[in-house]
Length: 178
Figure 1 (tube, helix red, strand yellow):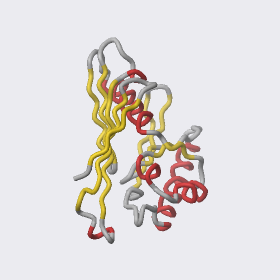
Figure 2 (cartoon, one colour):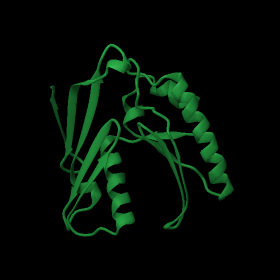
Figure 3 (cartoon, rainbow, N blue to C red):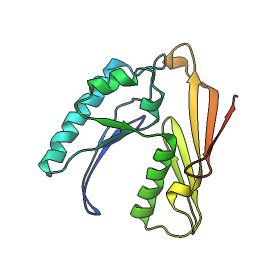
Figure 4 (tube, rainbow, N blue to C red):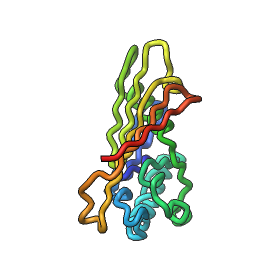
């Protein structure tokens, strides 16, 4: 399960064959005071329970991975405790690596490649040269946060944070504001 900022996606696979695809429109990325509202947590919990029953029907185990919404939420520990299944929160670099691996496998890419993963709260960009793997690729993670007194007034970009990973062991952080 991919727990993104705007939706949850279940993909049931056996080998490389996709057996089922399901989506639930749960807006985990609509943080209020940097927290995921409990109403969204209930929706996510219901969706995960439904997804688990689908996976069980295929005899599959379910693994859940969360991205920027849970990474950014101040109440992430409370959210995780309320969900019916364990969830792994991906770092920006892990998220970029998974996006790259998914694109390569799904599209049969080889050679120099640039992959963009456009998410609801972050965007990952991974560039792979012919001699590199995703773990040693150069890439960027861009996080966009809005600032406003209420979610309905969240229209201005307050901060853009860019993390550039030049290798698996070095990360360079650059912060700028607009």
